[in-house]
Image (cartoon, rainbow, N blue to C red; front, side):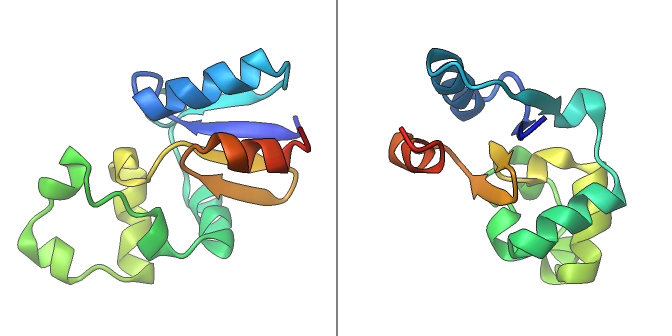
Length: 116
């Protein structure tokens, strides 16, 4: 599959992204963080393309539930196991189309990516 959308199905922004892709007849695979899980290799591929600080969703309830020690100790190495344990720490949606990684949803960005 050329296009993979990562997220959770009840996220409003993920729903907007899915709706846009469907309206434009763009085939994609959906990877549900909670149901399908994440592993170290997958997260490492994300981190090769997006800095961990940008990938981290500081507005999530998962982030607010981290201890102060966890928050203060965040770095490239400590974030990987936290992303695996708490996948909603990752901003969403994450769209991968060929080798392009897009975080969040923007009509303009999607139109440009898909040359519409």
